[in-house]
Image (cartoon, rainbow, N blue to C red; front, side, top):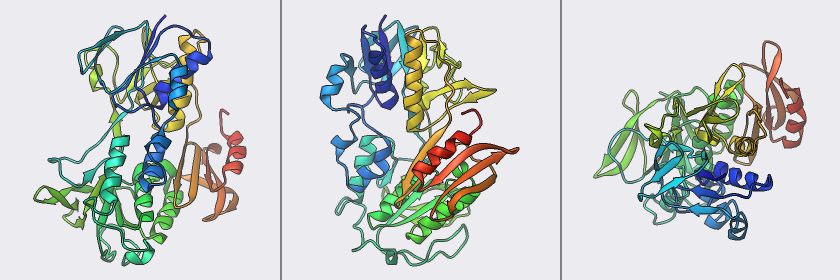
Length: 406
């Protein structure tokens, strides 16, 4: 029985590794759209963008470990179609296997309009390298002010319609108030640039953390010198001679920008599956065993699977790994339903946030001091549905046992 894994990131690599650990000795082919060997995405917006890591440190496995897998890695050749169990690629090659695992991940959203110099997204290693170059001295985005302190920004940030204060020197505007946008803004600020973050939510990362913790995170960003323009939808970009000059908010206000980073989320990379016969609806629709069709599975950001009374799709590194483990188990016949407890983490300005489960409006501090180190419980109808840790990794793991269904 042969296996073809389409996608060479965390979910794809984990699938191949798990199969080998389970004793699978038949042919495994891993097909990747990028030319890079499998690498880790979370460090791109933090350690790599900051310059603390080089490209080699983002690698998920060294060459020796990849070779030991005895799998064929075909890189730099994106899949363009799927017919039955045969995948066709950009270069015209075809790959057929008894089992196909789809782990193609996400495609970042862009603002409408023509491509402009100085506008970036951050999804791939090449994206991160391009943004890092733009933020380097002489990289086209200007140089950070000496010291990189909070004094580089006049004013402590503003909400939509507020005064906010003018920034001096080169400006970076991050469009998006979710996890990626917040991480990029924190890293850019640590690099010493004045940075404005704009987004439609009332609080930073409100969808992921709820309003109370989102407001605390916003306070942290403001204290570090990030200018927050929350509750502000972005209408488009302004340019001069094809180079971005500003980010235009709904209502007409323009935020000056030498560099604009668009972090408005991403969509499942499923366009190549048109005509495949698979059900695609906000991801590849799967059953509780992550199976999308006869002998076809999906794992990671691209998979939307049956979970409890509905369908769920999760976009985080932990899910990519855990779902891939489940897929490998099912390929070898273990018939294992995928029933995870959602989990994500983020590091910003030296603060680690971890969330097990999901947020809700009913939040109660269970341990510690708010704004320093604490654990909080999210409740729904009296049940604990989420556990949030703020700089408390050990305590957060202990509180996870209180979650419903764990």
